[in-house]
Structures are given as C-alpha cells and as structure tokens.
Length: 207
Image 1 (cartoon, rainbow, N blue to C red):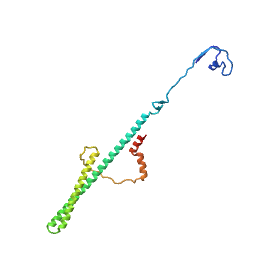
Image 2: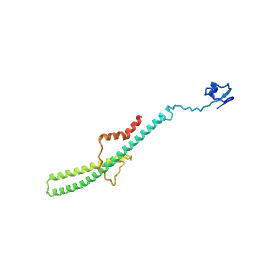
Image 3: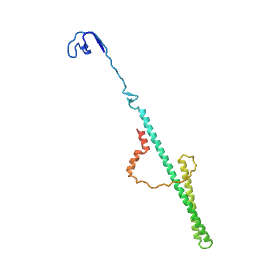
Image 4: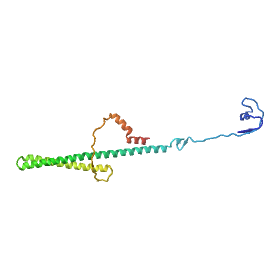
C-alpha cells in the first residue's frame, strides 16, 4: 500500500517520473511502504532432505524387517522340527507294535519247535535256527524300543519341554504320502530366493 499527494500515479511513476504509458508527470512528494510474506524452510535437516526419512529411521525400519524375517525363519524351523519328530514317533510306534506282534508269532513258533524237539521229531539244528529267530526278534524289538524312546525325547525337546521329558502319542493320525507334482528345480530355487525368510533378512541387513 502507499500514499501519494497530488495527481494520482503509480509506484513506477514515482520512481521514473513517467507513467506506464510514457507520459511525463509533474514532480510529486510521496512516501510508500511495501511488504512481502516470506517462508524460509531448509532443504536439508538432520542429514535428510525435507519430507524424507532420516538415515536413522531407514536403518531402524530395515532392522525391523530383518528381525521379523529372522523370527519367521525361527518359527518355520521350529515347525519343521516338531513335525519331523512327531512323524518319527508315529512311524516308530507303528513299527514297534508290529514288531511286538512279530515277536509273539516267533515265540509261538519257538515253543512249537521246542516241543517237537523234546519229542525227538526234529533235529537239534532246527531248534537252534528257531532260537536264533527268537533272539533276533527280541533284539529288533529292543532296538525299536530304544529308537522310539529317543524320538519321544526329541519330540519333547523340539516343543520346548525339559530335557528327559517323555511324551506319548495317542490317536495317531494317518500320515498321507500323496503329494502334488513338483515344479522344476529352477522354479523351486527362484521361489526359495524370493520367499525364504533367511534370504529376505540378509537382504534387509545389506540395505
């Protein structure tokens, strides 16, 4: 805004004594004020461009992504170990039960063979063969029992129970061995590189 006395003129005319149309004006006395609104904002602040995240924020976000992927990888590893231990317990439980039935059959056969030997119906050699079968069946049963106890301890350890804790499987479900056809190895590798949490965690750490 401004104030001029005398014939009206513009600020440009005051400075040049000439109007915008180039007409000479008379001398005037005047005072004039001008104002402007100024906005001052830094382009850089805290090591970053205005409106962008700081390096510390980016680093923290990448660290969070890395930790989330590592945690997911740990969970997947736990799930794999629990399923593996559970499958082994179910499998060995079935084998152990089958071996117990087999031992009963071998014991009956041995008792029959022993009775026939006592009646002098068979030779000593046949009795020895039957004894070897019985001893082998008992040994196999003991081996399967030890393996089953070991897998039960492994299952307990995989689910976080105290060392030495024994767990038993009741109402074991049928384990399906039917799988969908797999894609090619190259496709599996590409998928693994893209989806495996360990790879994603390493990528976040590199960034």
